[in-house]
Length: 440
Figure (tube, rainbow, N blue to C red):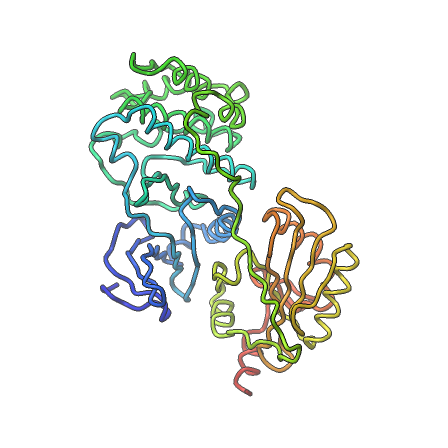
């Protein structure tokens, strides 16, 4: 890929930042906003050859649940017939461990990064997501010196290994992994993350790894026994906390809520409001006579015909959305959605002729769930319906889409975007839809 190549007319692709076995990462610029991004380009053929296509699809869905100030944001996913493009937040400050390479950190500075790491991990665990592979190259710093965990949920993808001269030995990564993971038996990913966070905290304060040995088997033995010594400059409270995190039995390992209650962790914390996810704004203005919006069908059709449906999963106006196609009229679709919502005791209000807002009956983790549904015209007798969370908890919204909406609307659904399931029709016939578009 040459420098300054335009991608989908939206991103200017610049220099190569790094590469792995089947992925390359480029610096990019969003043309409309001039914002810097990182663009990961993955070969579909190689992913298929490795049998990882389904895993990547699952991981993308995971990323929709994990939006936090201390996690690198996955902004958009696009696909052609041969490549998958992940457009991510560009983090300028480099790796956190490049700082440690220059010498251990002062306790207050190490504590700040550790607080941000635990905050992010706690949020992700609340969404049912574990990282399972926290390691030096996944911990970055932005221009404000704030921690960002990169590739959260995409850790199965091989990354370029960087050598900072301190932590990357031949057994660098295993030195961060919990003993139960090294044993390759079943394990709890959230408990394994806590172990890895303990190793990270130790390294920040010490400037070296807690478990290291020239002989790989000796190092494994130390990990299995949780055999390590804290340097004399560690404070008593820091030693106590690390010793509770680096416990070989995961059932006896300290939990995240308990970590957050320790005086050492709480010291110097800013009084911040609980992190809340971005919500969708609802356009209240309408003269009531607008026809259904014309959905940008090009990417919808091309992505489905490519057999890898990722179109616009992360566009600003389609965050955490659920999309289906229907052969019914816009009016019939709206009536069916309204009836289904009322059947679930949701309050329903019309925003526009082809846009509804629905509010759940119960208080959830982040207040009442509020969802908008909008109908877009693709072609005569082909409509696309988009559900979007306006407010509330993302996990509750996902359950609403999966367990409530799908069964209630099965009579009008042609196909759900992403799984090809419909009302007995199976995979959508892309040629049929393309023919209808051509008729226009």
